[in-house]
Image 1: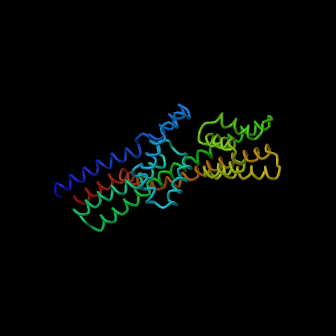
Image 2 (image 1 turned 180 degrees about the horizontal axis):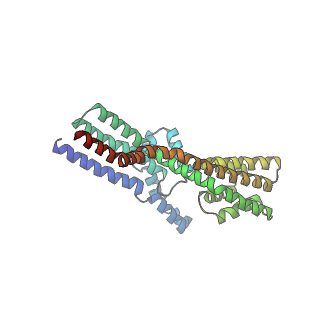
Image 3 (image 1 turned 60 degrees about the vertical axis):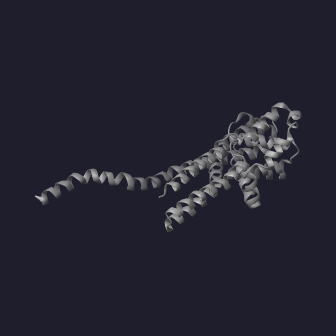
Length: 298
């Protein structure tokens, strides 16, 4: 391989590493500015709108990606970001920039490599790498959203028990939700606080509950929200609904734990056959095979 090709690959790799750090690990300046404006008040927040607007309108790769990508893809990415809990270090603009920058830099590196060593395997590998890098933000958000949904499902039975106790003590459903959200920690408590905030600014109760189920994507929470909406519609006692739903959620949590425990023997078969049994056969049959070979060779 010529020396200039090696230098070009090294420079491109360094640029890719720097770009990945800026897009994924670097500080979110827009979020820091927003928090600073919240601390200073509305007067200071309105003092520099041009800088924020300029950065939001011309944010480099994010603006280019927003114009190049289909609107449905941007909306799906934003919806997946909401289900992942909207991490502070991964705003939508950074994900759009990464979605455009990573395949572009990989395409440059791949073209340089293919010019020096073209082959069918290299071309297929290059296409697969481009495809994975293009959908890397979706894969990362899907993984986070799935873990968050599972955590919400684990926290839901205990939260329903707290709400049931509060309702039976004389509190309303909204006050019980506020009490459970204040005492709890984790994604479910954060989502309950968000739902209460939506209702406090004028959002209807049914709309706020529907948005809660849509944001989280947790099946158990969606089922609970559907039961609460039906109870509110037909006048069923909220305490009875909470008691029934809490018992059902505890039963499903126990069933999921039993299901995972029953899957362990099946998952252990492949490591046992591929890693443990061959070594065991070598240890047991190795000396005998060596003695047999020595006997026949003599």
